[in-house]
Image (tube, rainbow, N blue to C red; front, side, top):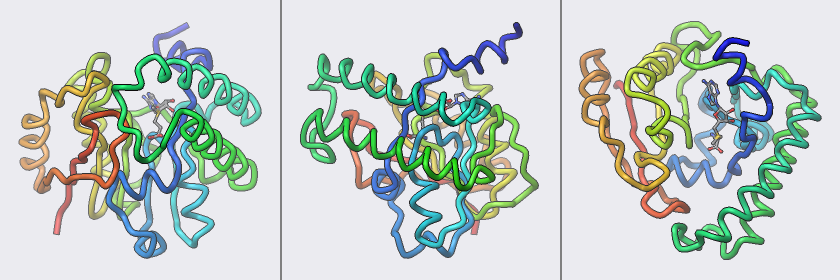
Length: 232
Ligand SMILES: C[S@@+](CC[C@H](N)C(=O)[O-])C[C@H]1O[C@@H](n2cnc3c(N)ncnc32)[C@H](O)[C@@H]1O
């Protein structure tokens, strides 16, 4: 089995996602602007942003390598992963800010709600959930107005290197007309991503501008800002 196929094994995927409301706060969006934008969520995992945004009149597409697996298997894996995450968090409560969720039970019910909404929407609108493996996206140039990428790139700086980050960001920019937002700017230990300046320089050379913005959201302590890559 090749490296890529091994990465696609369901046991290797953690199928967890945030809620629509968390995305709105972490990317400093407004609910009113959602229906005006064609949005890509990459990778979206078990996030409910696509489900809820489309129900509100939005035009949102999600991609993830997990979507190669049947929906019912993803649902079972998602439930196991929520239990695993919740017991891990209970041992490291002080690394998190308990405002968005007042306690572990509230966190668990929100992760469960995201999973349920995502799975229900996958069943009625499978065309909104595209299986693919970054850094390649099966979309044409400038197909989306706004591309969002949460809890993936810089968060896993220990296992995804600079060259992969840059390849993915260039691909996100290729399919995007106006703006890409990446959250957060720290890794799992809450250290700022060390190559952020180099990423910014590289995208400036491609003619894009950048800005670091504070999110209206902080759960992992220190994970409270996102990078806007935009052009006028
Ligand atoms: C931590 S989840 C984030 C989900 C969502 N963005 C959120 O914030 O809740 C990371 C996701 O990245 C997906 N993933 C990892 N490597 C990938 C790749 N090379 N291409 C596409 N998806 C990938 C995993 O399957 C997983 O669902």
